[in-house]
Length: 534
Image (cartoon, rainbow, N blue to C red; front, side):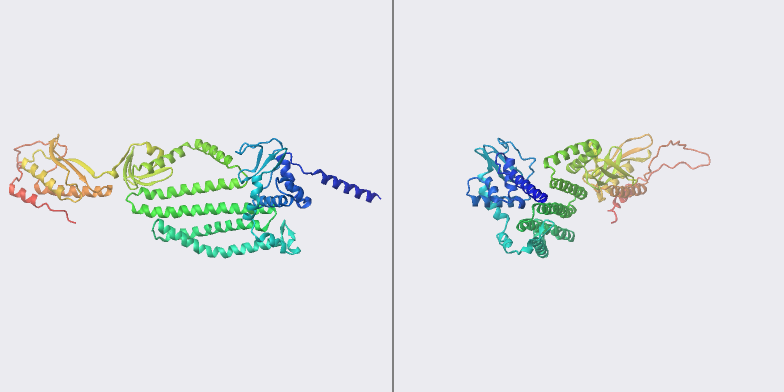
């Protein structure tokens, strides 16, 4: 008797609990709850669920309500009832249409919204009219027939997945394996042809990069195929959301990989172009630009991954901006150096290999990095100059000169006859005219003054060899020819000294100050000046 009483008590309680959930269309929250609650397996009542559809007869409304719920499942859209308004006079200001309306998923599915008609809330007429069309685009024609012919044991459930759905996933995976090997060759041919159409460069490194790029591109195509076919398996919404999240994560990772490989391909092509240019600064830009683009791709990829886990994109961008400001304030010198690097590559005040003077540093530019520029001095000392400072310095780029100027004074003895001075000057001029390393259009060799210990001859010449080592070699050749000319003419070079002349000294011969000024001899010496030996 006691057991029978307990049975009736529990049965009555269950009936009361079922009766608690009634059709309620008084506000957006109640309407959506009514729709989804009466389509669950434990409370399945499509007639009550169809009450949320306005303007259709009972059977059509039921079909729309059922298919609308399947569309939401196929899109992986799960309603958070804590965020759905309970105000019966609610009006969504983000919708341009007039009246009381509410968008369920404004970003993922803006065409799905509710509207207030008279005193109740229903799915909008526009939403109801698009349901059948959306359903056809998401679920293939064979989905319904497939479920009808599946035997009862095919509906056995394990981990919220039915047996026939496991088989469907296995078939889908097998198809993807087959398509992978076919599409890989097709995509590589397309990428290779596209590369030759854009810029015709045949290089093994570029070809290797294209092969590496092919795999993630094919995988992205297969992920899109799986994502499109997955709704036909009619998976449980929790399972579907899990698989959809996994696919979206893989898609983002593959896109990151694609863009990274694309950066390598573009940089390989740019490196080939940079090698063909005269400037070596372009060659140095390749690793700098590659590292910057790689970092940008990874940064944007991480931001996209965060949005997949429910983080608001606006919040992510705002957080990244605030974080960027904080990092910039904490590392002002690094930011300054980076800006300085950009200015160097934009303005190009020098190139790799140029001989520059920047403050107290004089040497050859070897590398230009993100933070600093490396300059090697003549004694092989390495100087690291921060790019922020280098961008603000007065840089004397001797590497951009058309010619290298060389100026010096030749001091000869005071007792040198005028005839030999004139011959010495003419001989140096002829040497410069015949020397291939000097500019013959503009130079100066003149007797310019009287110094304390010598007669000064100005030598002003321009070398056509622009690098420092070649300039020193050219100086050596010129100096040796001048010394040989002076030795042939008998012209002596002076040095700071005082000379006391004694015309007569006991038991010593007189100091001979006679110079050979024979005109024929001088002319023969000048005529003997030939071109340098190659």
